[in-house]
Image 1 (cartoon, one colour):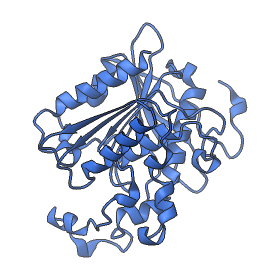
Image 2 (cartoon, rainbow, N blue to C red):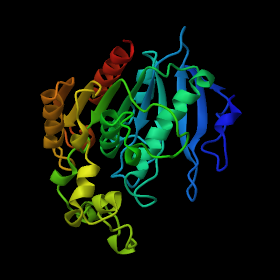
Image 3 (tube, helix red, strand yellow):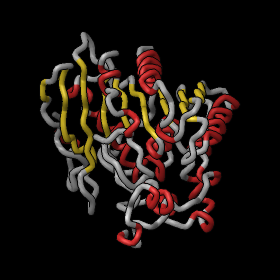
Image 4 (tube, rainbow, N blue to C red):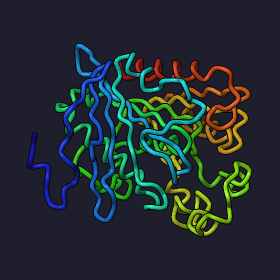
Length: 312
């Protein structure tokens, strides 16, 4: 291991030892970034047994930027093994945590995920993965984040790249699958989630003042109507260029949380600039594809796209 990578304060922890699994190996709790004043930010890396070093996909969870973890998946995927679908196709999966909005607002989460890419590339030999073939998969808020990563790869913009974790290294990727992500934050309905939470049986009166802050306010660290430049800065659609990697956008046409128009606009912008983009509208599907009869088919489509793009 290259100990010269570590200075004080340490940018990350030493990569963990692999644990054998039925499908290959797993590296649990890899602290890829250790920002001062915060908890270590970790990932789990699942590596299939293959003859050569496999490509890797980052899984980025959703949760309105304010909840969830690397080990959480949409409830609509219950009984469907998303990680297994990728492992079965010879693709490693890094499930990644990032700082949530009540811990640190934008661009903290983006900085963390870029640090994860640099970390995987720095220690690709230790992990036995191919650092030249990295793809992204995210849902909802995670879809917004993987879209941001895809269109700002190795941007040279210090404010977007950040200084978390290992500071040197590329952050470009080879493919992006974006499930019902946010792309133009200024065009998102700026509504409170409190009525929805109340309809789900949450005791609104028991919530703290911080917990009642609308998700977008917490994510950008300001009230959206007063911060149009922050909304623009945090919107993936603003960074689309011909150098964007291939995108697969999958979105429920009846999504009431993140309108289908968000992915339509991103798709049109990508295609207009000459980038490769495929948009799949899922009929009778609300947010997280609820209401659709073949979510397993969406997982298979996703895994096929990523394995095909990363085999190039």
